[in-house]
Length: 77
Image (cartoon, rainbow, N blue to C red; front, top):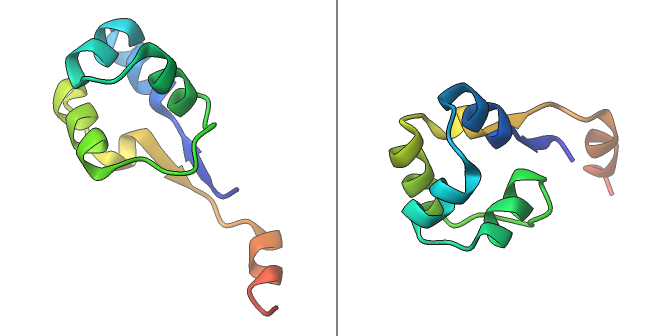
């Protein structure tokens, strides 16, 4: 998948614990862990907004996008 979650990098740069962030934004540690590992199909904008507020970052700091040629090939199906 061309969208990658780079939340771990942001947490490390800010030197904050995921547990503390999860508590501050109102989600479980499990949910944040799933997001950090990219094991979710989507994220709510309000959750993304709260993450950005707490971590003082932009969505592009948490999510990255790389074009995947396999995805381009499937576009013509």
